Image (tube, rainbow, N blue to C red):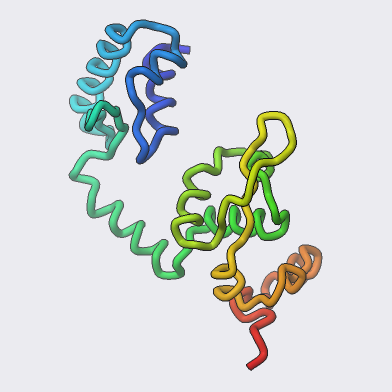
Length: 186
């Protein structure tokens, strides 16, 4: 694995949080000067590549892998599409995993989806659909997440036992309108 690939992967998974040189140094076990030189080299590579949409920027001692400004229109179109129904497919998947495994450790989400759920969890917490309720008593003590009363109200559920069974949902997937299932009786 190349140093540039390692740095790119760390920038990518850091997303909106960015990553500090000291964290890159800790993970890569190399000097700050080597990291800064590689970041500068990667930045020049991206800026000089007309076919690449990426740039590397430094703000407040954190480094970010960002998209070039000329891709703004494309990104906005995509973001507007996701906002029409309020939730992306990924967010709905993570929310479903948490609801059906409540309380659910983040490690379960990662095992099922095969990707780090941090970004999705943060968005669902911000939307007040899930909340951290403690830590699992398993190695690594991952955070436990549970759905909120806002989730229950949004999806019209009295309790989680009113969620459709997974077998029922799979058999009737075309007929299920999750937003109308088990609506509260007036």
